[in-house]
Image (cartoon, rainbow, N blue to C red; front, side):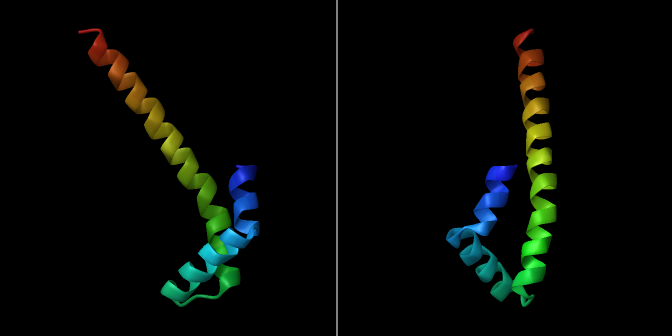
Length: 63
């Protein structure tokens, strides 16, 4: 997760935050805070989906 957190602190991350902030009409600070909270949840959900998908593949391969 530290890789994603460091991305938000980079020049590219600040551009991304600025773009999202402009699109949503929120401050860059609030946008940054929201992304900092949301990224762990999103990556956790993607990891869970990957695990479930892998289990389904193994189940289908058995038949």
